[in-house]
Image (tube, rainbow, N blue to C red; front, top):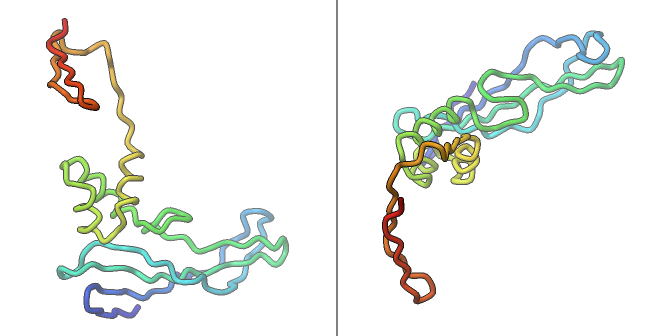
Length: 152
């Protein structure tokens, strides 16, 4: 593993390689094939600088049924590039009511990623438990002032 200190971030260059597994399709032994193009995985800050991992994953090929497979790691979900720890950090900061732009900036990810994570949350509204008295503020819509007072 190599560590490169850039001006604004740290970059870890790593390879994910292990012994070839059995083929999930036919059960015969797969062979090491080549490496994928490096995945740019954002990670938590290290020494006050944003960090990303350039991870090259080993590919395996079954020469019996031609099935291809990519090495998997516990850092990221299969076919994803955002690590689990970053997803947990996003959820934590959303609960703390930090703005989405601030979360994206702090974790060196896009605002779209934060929005996607917010959309993963499921909110349940129970209309049976509404308060007895509800009130609204005055609002102006297209130049017309609408006043909705208290409602029982």
